Length: 299
Image (tube, rainbow, N blue to C red):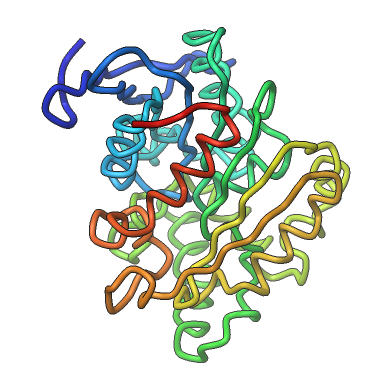
């Protein structure tokens, strides 16, 4: 076990097998003092490397959680986008998320389990992926990514250029999308971009894709859910977060929307919740909610 987190907090690089021959590269962080009281998996956003979640994961570890972060296949440390060109967004949600959840559940079969999903990771949880035995899950900026719903005209034009022109074009020509150059985080497999582009053009996002059976799947979720939004997120507006949340018809859903002023910072946006600046103020709320669902008392 190699220490890669907070001083005294043991952290371990792990390899998580999926139902194919592939694997996910992950990091397991543990409390610095004593054994974990609960376990939490952090399911990442589209093409966002797990290093974004390192500060949040380390914080949750200090609150008594065993915390798993990882990269989806074809992103970050889990293989190149070019070599995984056929991976779709649904493959991340339907295969990678359950694999990560199952790995953590097998590692800690006797602990209570909760989860956090950022954007796409929250979609996966809402679609009843990785939900076995969960006592609750939290989503952050998990919205219906419909481009025409973006309020700011300049941002809408930028996103439409990426999702309708540059992204699909590079996917077809190169077999992958150079996401770093486009401001998308990591490079993306071609099929993931093409599926994302398709969903973003329909009013109901993946709920309008009959092959997803999305309404039936969200209706199966019966646990507690906290949907977190950021009011300066240009795309994941409260209205678009509500598109997902309203489909969780049998879950116990709460919503919280934070403004930059709540964290004492000028901006948070789609990624900032997991950065250490805003996190020092906002993360205790998340840890408290997760701990309450798990039935533990933190330090």
